[in-house]
Length: 162
Length: 159
Image (cartoon, rainbow over all chains, first blue to last red; front, side, top):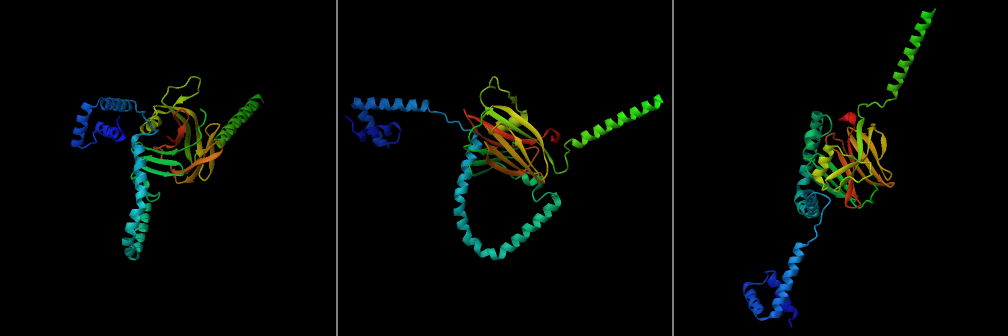
């Protein structure tokens, strides 16, 4: 009768997770123990069944949209730490650069408002937005510059009868 | 005598027609600078063929291709479509279905605010600059792995 440790070693052997020396030891043991060999066959069969019958999970959006949401969330979560690291460095320069920066922004706004006539961005500014994904209050916003569409996906809304 | 009566009749009839034409033009919705000609479509997406007995039209191919580029569904059907004028500074209510309605506010400078109501409850509010080449789409899941979309696009006169 095999104990639990032996069964676990056998599973590890099947998954190729054992070091070479241990794997050789288990291989030798399998030749002598019919029970172990039978268990190995059973484990192999179960593993193959699971691989071949895995339920495919279909997402309601393309993989690019799906992964861009994850990427966006990771960036959002890592942002506070980055801000904290930069703050101590930036604080010393704030007194000198902030007024200069504000003046530069105002100057840019005034100049571009004059050129485009409809605010600071105009047509060329909108071209900068590409695959922006934002999430708030149960909605996901997705802007695809290449396709030319803005989508606001509402999550968890009660369905309507069509 | 008869000729003068005829002349008066012709003159009166002409004047009446002119008056009616002027009235028709006056009553017609005119697009003033700053107003937006828009179309709101309620679209239903599915991977199944069009169900029998349902009054559904195929969506405009351009919109369909844009939606297909983002979402996984292959078939997009128009449930309802409304053309309307969004007057600058005014709020326009547009019913999409018996449970769904949108409110569009023209904020000026081509900026609009769209509020989507489902069963009387505000679901989402979106503000953005309206681009005639880029539809604004509000969407969500529907039953049986389908989805609904409310697409705001240029109205027929604005295309």
